[in-house]
Image (cartoon, rainbow, N blue to C red; front, side, top):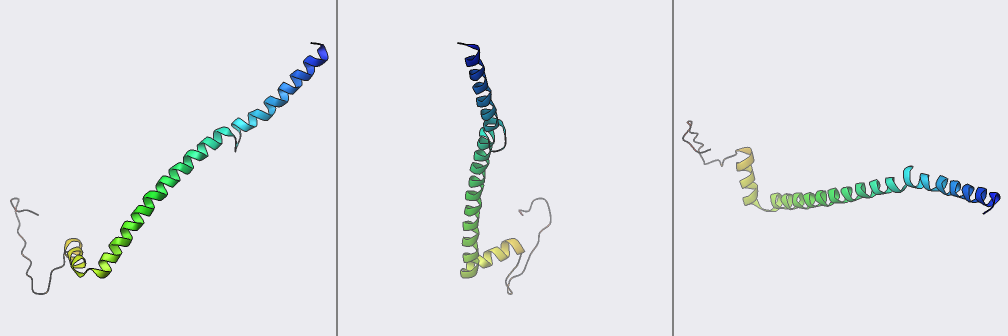
Length: 98
């Protein structure tokens, strides 16, 4: 191989390296692409979880709007409400169940 051929091969190698380095290391390069694919997978998992939570909340809303017994149960449990004809009796002491 002559001197001129060595220079051409060396020049081509440098051009190839100059083109490959940005593809691997710079923004939108291979390493960044892998990072973004993982972020996308994480967001999709998070979105599925939020969608499931939304479905559960919609079911809860429907029950509260259409099921009087469930509404009464929640009012008693979470708000401590009692019916008009009921009497609240509170016991104090460590032996009583809460």
